[in-house]
Length: 144
Image (cartoon, rainbow, N blue to C red):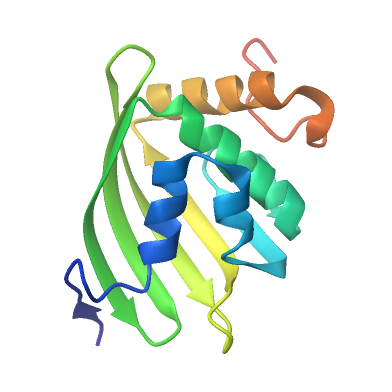
């Protein structure tokens, strides 16, 4: 089964550092060219290093705080738990699954946010910030 890792022994270190930097470049460095992002804030998966890095960099700037609270690894997968705040202190909880190739690049990221109201607000804000830089209809649109 998986194993818990300490702060010094973490496969997700580059991922958590990218969140701390809040920059697309930090994410792009850890992604495979053909990375796929699946997330509860998306209406469909997003593909490709540049687009996924753009979405993740933008998303990281919405968080007022973000703390990774647990990690387990099993083979090529890392499972992370986290808690965050956004929107003047609204609490979000989540989990992330990262899948890596043999070169250590992330080929797939699956991100879940909760509760639902915060998830929908996060999705709508992400869509607003990204505008037409990501395919229309990728994010929650209030009133639709």
